[in-house]
Image 1: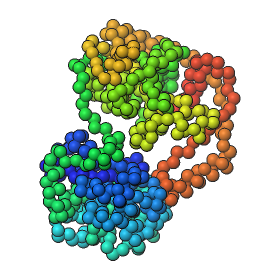
Image 2: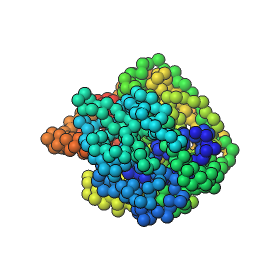
Image 3: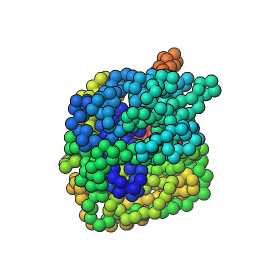
Image 4: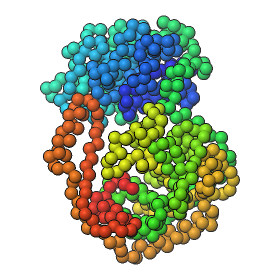
Length: 576
């Protein structure tokens, strides 16, 4: 689509699915040139289905400023009020009869069930796999709109995540099926796309927003085309307004979804200050030798210390195709964000921490985004490397608790997790997020079997925003050129040494047993399968604990030896 046609104002109702926000990218991809991040954020918003604003009596006042709805995927079933009740009310509200709506997966099933159809369970769950579409070519539309499947050829592969589907035998005559997929022999076909004959309602069972789906942008373009044609006939002024940058969703609606999309705008930063230097190190050993023997020895010699701050992104399995790179480093400083929403700066050599004032940013997401963008803006351009993405900088994790802040569910608070406080590990005392900043690194490229040392060099100058506030507290970004040169020499010397050194890490004997009995564990597996089969989730992570007696682990070296024993026994593509 030509961006000059204008972007409609769209509310995406989120049924708590990880794919929901991909719909924003799919909408943007339909335009050439792409809409600016600011325009996209003012026209497309994601609102959780539990929001009181989506009740028909509340949503009605926004209708003059909303051009379309998209009902997202999600867990559960559309005939369950807890899973789909608010969206079902919107579909059934007389005030919304003339609003174009697209349903995806759960949303598609909801359009069908509110029209009178029923949901049935598939013979087996079908998650993260592809099906081929077969499109109904007999759809004849003469009012300028398009079938949702126009331009989608038979055999197009789409990605599916569903254990439930619409029972085609129960679909009323006012709904037409426009695409199907064959099921297993003897099980008929699966309804993949529907259109309402009397209202601008469209649904797809598959995920057009997935990168594994072919023609997903064509399907979304058809929907957006139909939105435009609908309003051209009903209220032509609306479509003309889309061409004005000032046209926007109402402030009330935007406020409900203002945390759902990072604008990604450039920061105003001083001139470039930092440069990444690299040096390829000489080593004739095989990749297997590097991973099994040399990596632990290099880490112990170059980075491991008694104080916290050692970093090892360890891809220990040389035969796993996902193992592309291993990286080792030592933090210059560490940022910890606690369950109360307080950010602290730690230095490995100090026992106390310094509180960081995050103003004017209200969340760690915003603060870190500006910090990272400032760093990138002040970094001299570096050469591309498809395998080694980490070459100094921030490394760390976001905890699950950050969902409260990222989705604007609630302010950060340990009190929301009190039910877990009596477990062996008190999660409320652990950081909700933790990030280390590394000025130098040693990386092993598995594809080229090459060690490379990296150094971030500070060439002088100023910085701004979060980086400036950290520097005011004593943090240091980058090293001198002399320190970088010394690091390269030290890294090569260490590598030369381990090539000749016999392995001297003493591995402890491990004797462990599972906390859960086999019958308990198997029962939990069956329960997980039941929940997946009825649509409560497409994936469940079931973990178990092991306990046992180990030789005395009286110092840091003992724990490091334990990790080395575990990585040798069970080498993984991604560990740390």
